[in-house]
Length: 382
Image (tube, rainbow, N blue to C red; front, side, top):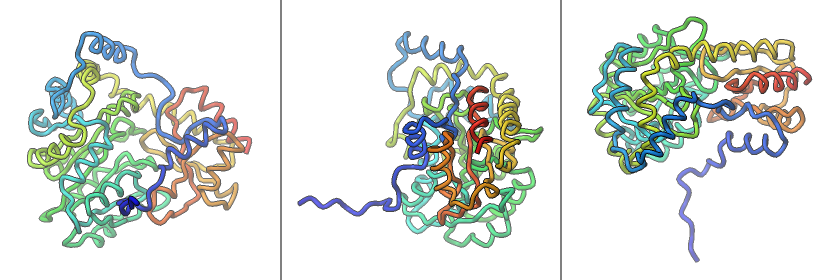
């Protein structure tokens, strides 16, 4: 009899996003759980994809990404952050940001290495660490503002620490780091054999006059970092799964060794289309206002409910505290909300290794106005 080997991820089942989306479908709930828009990408971008598909640009792209797209990414990076990465040696196009995260972790983490993970943390980080033999070391963000306690981070760093994963704007909380955070991080990693992954997929969703503090703004940090971005988030095309990583040459070289055997290359006609459409700087420069308006609408609509708003400074997520409604665990309440009220949300406890429960749920406001209005009506009726 064939005996299946021990699981490398014994604690992992279906992701919470799969679970809540299935629950929403079963009960006809409005899905504010999974982070995807219910509106389309810019029509011109869709037309470009159609053009390149019909014109025969459908074979393998170069492993590192189309040269034209990498050149445009370099120009965009210079425009936004003042850094001009070399398209040949410092930029790699990937099949989504999740692939880029895995490649970056695999490139530097060896068995026994420790990786600092700030919690709550996006759910793909820890499995990638474990699969590469690393040990996650968890540092909680301060509740309720989800700021980073750098003194606590410092205390968790040991000679075995190889990597720190940073995420800003932060999923699931919507918190953003400041320029002062970058200074403290730079002081922390100085003279240490320590790398950084900066997950910046929501870089164009920073609100209220704040400036996105990319690690690419800071030369010392950029020199030891993998900075990961997502076209799917920027252009409302999460299903296309196209992202990229900017890293110095020595890190990019190791990153590409993993990438070439993981996906090798990313869908070709979409890369051509994105290269063309990146000339439209207005889209991503105006994205903060676009999503701030949606956040503000959703917050106004639920202001009359029994939920309490937890401020969101970035991303397209809004946390709502439900302590005044019930003492139920957040996973149980999220399930009941889908079944009885008809609105699906994500319980934030699932982003903690120890299921820490602050009685908050995450709602995605990347939706049409009518979707947000109906969801808020149901939430206010609770």
